Image (cartoon, rainbow, N blue to C red):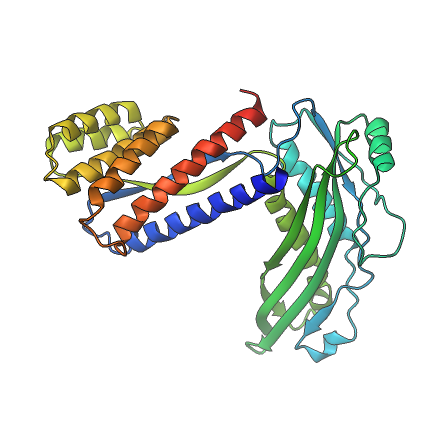
Length: 358
């Protein structure tokens, strides 16, 4: 079930990304467009759902740091002389993950086990916490569940060149792989396993006179990378906000202008009523106007939380375009994607209400 939830979350993110890309493409042709674009924030369920009785969690570092992070660089003086430690990055990852989870009201208490839990040296192995480990940790720290970093590995690649007498420029790529798991004391297996696979590409700018800063820079970037990946990973454990793009159509018609004025003031119920009044008087032969009005009403209903009605009007808008526009038309594609996004929002909303107990 947890894996299915994570796949659903990934599908929603991909759909929203596609939708936003098409909107951005349309924006490039929007000098005299009858469309107004707007950013919205959506509240999304976490990738996994903890049982309702779980009120507190402990963040545990159960991974062994690499004794030396692989580092490939075009700067020959550094290749054999720099030893990069990942110890601090592991602490930064767990602390950041804990802070991100604690920032959500989902749990009543989030705690951090500051010392590493594993004592072996096998950094290349992914070792799960045992049932006994989980029970002892939950009892000792008085928590209901464990979120554990069970493996984290880095690889750094860098290319640098001299851009002036005193400066270098270049690029750095830091590959990150790992595993995070959620554990419950009464379960023999983890609640879920989250696979980490990411590449961070920070920009570099070196001062050739400060050799010491050049040598420590990769380790600093390693710590920043760990924080960035931890922030991304937090959405698996707590509900989160995301930024999306939506749009509505405008016209020089007086009633359209009144509706648009209500939309500008975020009075979406009023805007809906005004667009609906125009829609009811518009004949089917004016399919473009009718489709745009239906799309506007879909947005109104989405922004007031009635996702089922939003889906109805988005589908109606799409129906009016069928047979009139080519399937390759951006507006046609946009409306189809919007329908898919709303379908996923309906499913996500059910999961979200289950998670936040409303």
